[in-house]
Image 1 (cartoon, rainbow, N blue to C red):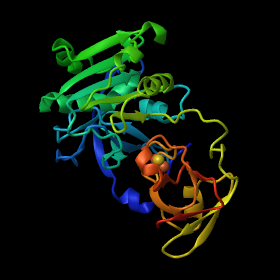
Image 2 (image 1 turned 120 degrees about the vertical axis):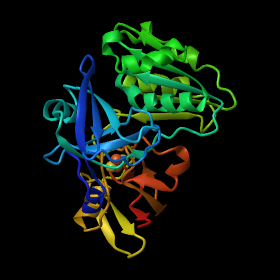
Image 3 (image 1 turned 180 degrees about the horizontal axis):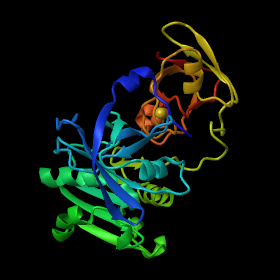
Image 4 (image 1 turned 30 degrees about the vertical axis):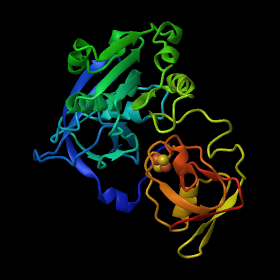
Length: 331
Ligand code: FES
């Protein structure tokens, strides 16, 4: 599905030059984006992503993989996914060196916690991109960390030369499974012992995410951090349909306006149709751009980013549904 942004969001985009495209591994290219005049770029923190506007209304989110200490460039890596929604294919086919491309300012839903004593970074395939940026920061800050990079084989990995110093100093470990996850890293064993001040961050494809989630079920709240790069399969179709009521209404607290949300509409769609500006980006519950506070009603969340502490006060308007007849939004 193509994603859209409101005019306000579009005003905040940057026009960047594609300075380099590099083959990284099987199906993986990295793209180095710079200011055309060589100016510094807006700063970012490890785990941040940018939206890339690919034309024809297509907008996709990609994590920044380079060191946040670099001020002159953003680097993303993109795995061409033939069965995906078309963003990675379009990027591989359309973007050329010297092109100008419109991107958002960096946003971050996958923050590094500042006071960790020990950090485990767990990457599944192209999920390495945000974790590589984190590794640069942890390395530079002298934090005790280890990184595990799981892939089918060496030809499927990215950033080999840049990661080599971390491999050489014993921080980075590669795990190749030949396509059989059971033959790869024993995630359960690796994550068997949580400890005070120990945090884990993981990102990868669906099966990998499930394995990491199961292996961290006993970790204390606030010590497990993850980011999906693809919405997981959900029961029912989207808009989600588990306990949610088919249609419901949302009330704008500041104006009292009541807007009906039909069973085929997202809350974001209904708000936009009613002339209520809401910024969106991924439209898949992955980026947090469309997050709003709600004041009453029960929510079926369906997103991949809100923490348990946020779910009682916030929802994502692109995928959340109501399980009550009305939600009151703090707009
Ligand atoms: S637009 Fe990305 S979470 Fe809703």
